[in-house]
Length: 308
Image (spheres, rainbow, N blue to C red):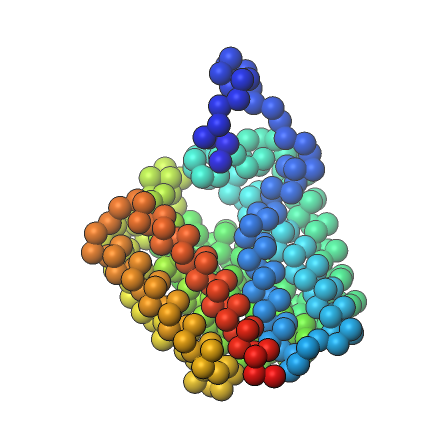
């Protein structure tokens, strides 16, 4: 992002301007990632309510969104803290405040702790204890189990660690129902199956970055061709998994046709990537994977309200 623009200060050889402290902390929360997390949680909330949410349910959903956003932001900040050395060696992440040394360990740790504490309190007081504990478990799964244990040790880090990243719809469902039910688990499964092809498409064109950082991502450990095959295979499994809401009776034909159309489009990208690789195609596949997930869940929501 900033690499593409040369400021006058940079041209003169001076140091680039330091962002404001507020922006440094804001960047730590990985806003784009957190937005997708909250979006998926909101889908879970809305699908958990049979009709239009009442005022009370809407207020509960709002509190849940704020709490989940804060805890997710805390997990992202903790991730930046743990990986500041790795981030500094990767072009994709070298601009982060922790990687550039603009924030100290204690500043980052305190910021993460405050966000997590406030978010947990909101969930406990205004939502329910189950959502609070599930959200805390997601924090531990991502910030500790995935970041500290899995990511530096195994090329299957994305597959195993994807369980924590797939939790947002479950958190949203639990916030409204106070329980974890099959419908929520199906939404979780869809994100779980979506995660490997999504991240491996990114890793394919960022392989040098991951190799430089010493991370055992699949393209680094097993090569480009092996990774492309697995992107294709997981996309096939994802297409099958995305049909579960219709098979279970959670959704109707609107969602079915949307899931088939989006799934086949994703599969076309994965097949093209498998047959003939290019960095540009890997980028397009990665970008489409984000659009795919958003449109798939949006289709579930349209189907839900259409059939009321």
